[in-house]
Image (cartoon, one colour):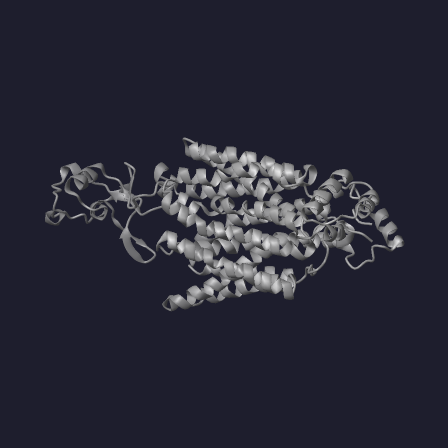
Length: 559
């Protein structure tokens, strides 16, 4: 019995060619980090208060600090049990009729009983040097929800792109889909940087997310399909670790690039380089075999073997392709039609959703501490690196399922414990929260490659795309879940995060182990993983069963 994994072992499972492809594709994760979490700097909301023209003129004449001007214009309001100057109201007072001098201490002005009103002349911002879209379009107070829309439209784009590019990559190939995504990325990314109004920014931000997510996932699947089974999990984890590297580079870029529009240009520009990958990276031979494009798959596999300085036995590949039967087409029904496929699909959907909700929720919770935004962001990014190394260490010795489940459960338990640690034990509470961040980061990185290992070749990209759409739903829900529940009780979101993470970990235990198992080529391999595929009676029975179903998934690429 010959499979493509056997052929790949002969050509070189991770030789010179695969290393070149891996190095090129890993670069795709770097700008993706900026697209995904760049809102921290692009949408930075500084301290602000109502602008009163008369007070501004006096402040500029007298050389007052912004705080001195705020003192006379912003009434005190109760914010989380503490009296602070209002950001959205001002005293309803005609300052041109007051005796305001350059020495405000000499002014005997009693503001008690003066009514407050909403801002009428815009806002002042106590933050110099960074131009965010918040300060450019005054997206504060009653318009503050529009800042959330900047990230929501991105996630909506992610959601649609996951479906669209999942289908396109399985229908027309990985390489062509990746090219299309990069062309859209360059165009829409630059339009966002140049858009004159916020509505057009939101529209093209959604288009940008549509192509970025689809291209990233197609890139991931292509990379895992051209390496041997013993290297799949390593390249998958390192590919995602480059996202963490992008997180560390982002605050450095933001420190020197203080205008949000120029930051957007830096996020979109790398995709110009990625367009060239159409000529530098070959199509996936696995996908070609699943489409019965034997001659093209043979040429690519021979070229791969030649670059790896290996000699390929052509008859094995010809036997593999010529006896494959009809070419299957990807269908959404294939993800739920049979029992094991249905179980895998629902478990992965819930885990993608959980990973996004808890991961983003913990980041946002730590990121609102009010310290140095650059340093805080950098430190929070460092937490993700131990996760990658822990995954590499454990899955090599233990497998996929147990570390995946344990990471979710540790994240959930840490969230629950953190919720009940008093604020007086600040550092202990921070450490436990970081353990939760470490656990959910491990789970987030593992769900990607475990997802690809439990779907057949012809529907692998579609399966990953469909399941990961729940990640985008989680990304939309997470900020609302965090901030709305925090208004009831600050620690309530942690209770929710902990509960869903523990449930996700329990569900993972229902999945089969994939350590050392060849990538499945057909639904037959998923439903009967222990069946001897060289048993002619069982092969005939399975073919008859599949042909009787309302789908054209009728055969395998293995013999």
